Image 1: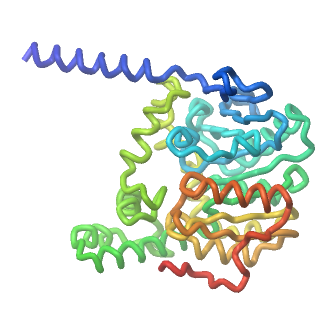
Image 2: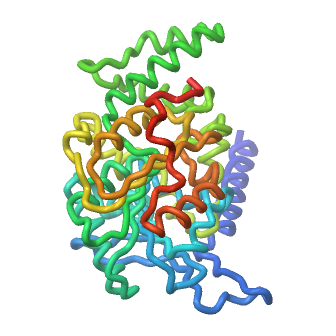
Image 3: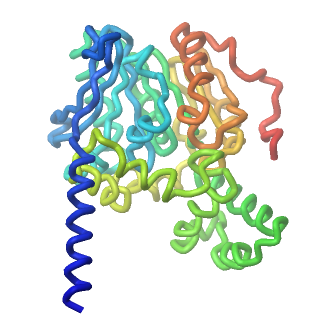
Length: 366
């Protein structure tokens, strides 16, 4: 018994030592042809005071003079995924991967409300405008970050060149109903009786909301069907958990906080607000160019609901872009197409590459 306990203790110590060695916590510089830091680039992890609390972010750009792009993450920060799925955004922008109040690097900032997250985004925007001497910057939201992002853009359009919603939320409770119905249908057709029984026990309805047992089942079920984080990602463990621990730009403590925050903070803390809000009613117009980029297999945030929202939204320029190989994360799944849209449409204030307006609201793959 003592020998077994000693071996387990030694194994745990060894694992901890490996994880610590794999977690230097320093962002990698962009290399030039000689392997030295690229002149004029920026690669930093920084912490600043935002509305009275210390919050962290990664700032990455091959040219510090490029336009600034502020990125608003969803339920958890996802910058760590760029180690496995490079986006290339840092070639055209100075990308600010802010980790919002209560999430990841900003874990100790504590719980947040929707209004606090909106106010924080506006305050950070002003900091970035001053620091990089840019009158306007670009704003991108992903998933839950779009719930904050579209409200920020509608409130202060004069601070942004454009708003880009990746997997844009519209009416999330309706989106959850559509996802539930789709999963139940798919598992019935495939003969997976076990999943059918589990889903039938936790129905999602307009009046009953989302049962806690459904939320525990939701992510594994979505990833099994290719409608979760990425179309080709069939496991949260191998697709998200392991890459986060392999990410070298976090310290070991920051990695622990990333997952502590996942269950306590970030946009998930305003989940009730997200479910209760129909953004078509709350944010019906925005006085700046607006772009929605959506994976056709996405059921985390409904493809059809996002398209319906953009059709109703009043904006001087707007475009909807379908990513036919993607589920919830086209910036990681189809980065080349993403960059082309950003370069040729968003930076130009145009919508030439957008889907034809005559396309139906539903996905042709459904």
